[in-house]
Image (cartoon, rainbow, N blue to C red; front, side, top):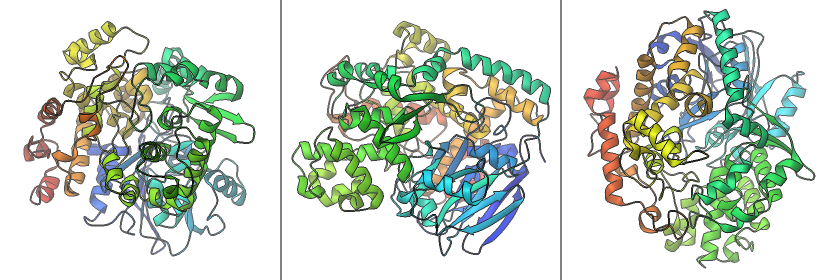
Length: 632
């Protein structure tokens, strides 16, 4: 066993029923693990031209060397495959306890290839791996599936990640669920898993993670734990979740209202009931494995049920669908988690239908006699069920927003807001220019990593304070001025690298790149204590740069070019109608100039958005340059 890594990658061929292993060690120098190593694995195992639902599309689960250690927040898992939505490389990430359990069972990564003839699940108990029949599980929701497997296998401590009915039915934005709300969402990983007839992966391990310097690691981890507990952001999350910040987000025009139709919704600013809902129904705050942050709120609402949630549904199932009823918010959240569908994409589908209905482009006849009125409880909950069941108009939405809009006609198509085939994250890009840049050049339509974008949002500190931070970190106060187009490329560049530092190591990016730590010093120190290596910060960041460029080259191989790094035309054409940023719109020419600056810093060709051969060879990706640049 290696320090930090188990040293084994598990290969599961579902078509042949064959299980093999290969060593992790050859990859760690250039890719470390987690997201980075997963990107190399999918680049090598995916054959160009393979459809997302073809058996040849590999589905890969990736832990990092810090996953499952004493390091706080070390419960993260990265998942990758070809996305059925974007037709590009999918990336999702989930927490909970499943990742550490996989390490304790002896594996760093799992590569699924092929397709089982009938529903199955994978059972891993230490060194024993079995493909088992899952026909009795098919049709169960994600909560039922986990409980059934724990009962069948006789151990309540078994950790399970699974799909729900939406994944079984290949809803394009189906997600993976573990526990009652830890999700690998956004990019359709649940649909890819369902296409393989793979219902779940159940894991139980009795081993541990070998570390090089255990006493020092424990000492530093205790210090990190304390710093997390004392951090004001985590104290707020532990006590109130995100509930108290929601009205502020709308007041500052950070969250959009409806289908990016409006901002500063006065009803939600004045009448938001989230705090009362928390006080009445929150049982406790929860964290992932070995995390004192406790950013997940555990609710129990009579006649709806129990579960956990974090930030996304608080905007997706409130303002984005014109809803003020917190019971509806919770029922929608639990229903999505049970069915195994991504809440962000689902709320966007509902928001689109509400806009089309409001503008009289569709009628109730187009949606099975369900009137898609703004904020309608029936419209929200019925649409979720119909998507999961692929019934009626839900079957159209299950194929993606654009597929549904095409059935409704050209006016509906003009209304669709997407970035690289996915719904934009629910942030207002017209006012927050750097956030818009990161969403456009990113891989899945959202501005994560957040560090660069949150500089633009003056939270509970003054705008002047953020501008001073921006000047110190990025050399320009403009980086923290939301409406400025200046100084936005460098924060995007650095933030992307920091996100990958966390994902490669298997730790929480909220802790290590956003709220508690802002640079790679602590992650590098923890990495060295666990692995026994003596890496400098720059080496860890160089791996992140290599990973970012390999991700880009996978997508370039799929046909991605500069023109795809853009935002929905609404953001360029429809100014904000109210609020502190009234009149703001994304200027197309200045937006393209921001992209130029970003590509220049990245070492990518400005005309095409493709990494140059010089950059790829600098990053030891000459083999990738040889394969892809000859085709581009």
